[in-house]
Length: 450
Ligand SMILES: *Cc1c(COP(=O)(O)O)cnc(C)c1O
Image (cartoon, rainbow, N blue to C red; front, top):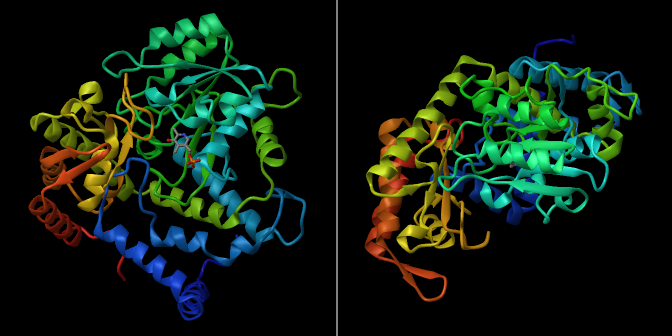
């Protein structure tokens, strides 16, 4: 280990950078400053988002990202990597400890890339992949024809039952019929617990690899508030900027099967994933992002993070109960995680209309398709809410009820108008905007305004 005292040069350098930007490029600096303010002045309820600690962002923006190299710690293709090797080893060790994993790869540039790495490592073009349908809550990378995962592989999709709950019987039947090489579980829009052990039993029955994608719930898994897939799945992937409050990027974890030989190769699963990341799918790692992941993993191991994750879950439950109490329809009837999915089609609205009306009032959400949705992904009949950022602001049950009431105020006052438009009573708009501003002032993003 190198010296553990800090000289303060990072802070000075970052400050110098910000000053130079403001002086040399005021147009860009102004946009970045306004975006910084916007994040604090709006209620972010996008389920896929969170807000990284400034120490995480400091790592991502530090000069370590100047380092160009390929390969892994101790086995690089460039000189001068002694310190970045220590940083990457630290990130790997922290990821393994946080998730109880035997192997971690911190180089994937994103969650999508992490999935592509696993799929391309375990399958050949044309092999069969069984994943959750995009329209049922799955992700593009789980076999959608809009992504390489659905174009280069033969993708078969499973869905949910009429209540929006995972239909494990259907998954097993499709697995028996199509004999996939890989089964993907995990979702982008599924408010309930995923039974990873059950998915593994299905995978074992047909000799498939199981990939668990925990991009949305990684923080709950790390905090022990959602069952961990790490020893059930052959490989687990996640984005690091969602519920881990980390930098943009991805992570691949392996559990008890890390040393399993991969058929048709001379590699173990861990060796195959390392090779699949570099050189197969990626080139140089972003070492600023790797450092920022190390920082985020350390924060996620702290007792404060556990309390935050508990607020995320209890806040979502509160939000769901409040919506239900106000007469709204919830997909699956409630939530087990950070996410609430509202069916707004029943109110004669579309997700797109609800999304823009809420945004107009300072509440940032995203439209989402729901089971049986008659609309496509641009319109949709659903709205997805998440509590990651509200919980980070320190909001508890009382505030989540206030948020639900504000959303309800907007949705019930909306009058559809014209083709895809709507009209919102200006009095309601200004009332909700005022209340959003008050909530944001009362519960500012931590450290956002120095
Ligand atoms: C967000 C998400 C991803 C993709 O992550 P990116 O970092 O945006 O590429 C993959 N899988 C699921 C389930 C996600 O929700």
